[in-house]
Length: 94
Length: 488
Image (tube, rainbow over all chains, first blue to last red; front, side):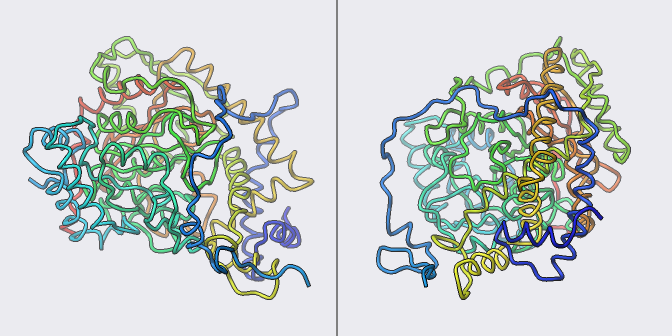
């Protein structure tokens, strides 16, 4: 085993994912197998290869002006919780 | 005849000759859905009333003869990761179970402007992460050719809907084969254009550097017609290309004599179903018979492509899916503080495969692992791309199998994520290199399951690729075979 349950727990906190102990054990085993497969990239010497960044020939930047009028009601209609025209979120300051 | 079985171009001809109306056509599609979709489960959401309305409006436009859009009055289905204003869009996730988009994706706007009829939203693997639709949070879709088999994924609902005549054509998205592999599994045409050819604005994001929208159709001519309607620069998507859009149908019938067809020698791996290998070799012989010059080429980094893809795609996914925090839209769990709200919301609303990919992506981007995984993968991606640049200097197109096997059984690979990832081996390289690639039917195995032939083209040379595909298709009968769900 290369990957430990502790590392999976650390990454899960970074990704804001709660895991049950059962999930943690199963994911550690599965991710370890997947990472072992990924390690085959180590066979290649890439010390002089510039990494791929993007595949865009040229970027046509548009003018920075509003073209779509925000529809407040349609946007707030999807909110899990609202107060008038505001999103209502859990308290973050004690 | 059942109007739902028509191709887009045949139905378009009949509509313009006033032999049929869009209302009759749309009604035939909904009757077929009512009769069979309880077995295939291709759709997550149907939009019958709105569709019949759109059909009536299309008929009015047809009567006025005020335009000749080939999609006018044509019933089309959309994968449920295209935002549709006012129509529930879920990405097959509990996270977006009740989400009503406030705007249309650019491609949806284009279809609406062309007068297409939107039938409904098709099933997919949650957030397009999977190769079988078994990772849909709602239910699996079944393959119309055999209801015990997967339809392929992630655009499996769209593929099943086209194969079962539940629409005349559909749209899918393809970050790593998600249009082509289901097209192969269901015996239809699936086309991923060049990266940047079609706008991604309003597509629920998964792997942004590889994802592309494309058509899923009953034949190659329809694929050309749909791409024509979708392609072009979009100011709302800075990755969309400003190159002019050619006429994709104009040269479909020009001979393919003298075109150079490359066959990658690394693609004949062990694990390929012998019937797939035989069907693809027969297809190559057919292209040769029509005067194409076939030569063996080499893509030396092929064996690394799956590893590269699953590092980059999961890294991009972990970043893209960070937006699902339960604050402004989507699911929110009740919890005692903010951090716990995030963690429980994401635990309860994401499925197992999505969690697996978020964790893998977060791991490869995290301090201490970035160089060994993410950076390394981007370097090897440059090598994979270089392989294709070399090969496509000599060749006009490359021909390969679409998938190593025909559709596998539902449940066969769900416990082994790595085995599922390896079934994408032939399709993901085109995404890493940003190239256009299409799958079309090239035979059946002894279980009567369809086999797919993949044709990969040069950057932005969709026209040549479509021409080769059309010539192969017209010399064969595979695309005319249809599954008979009524008998099952």
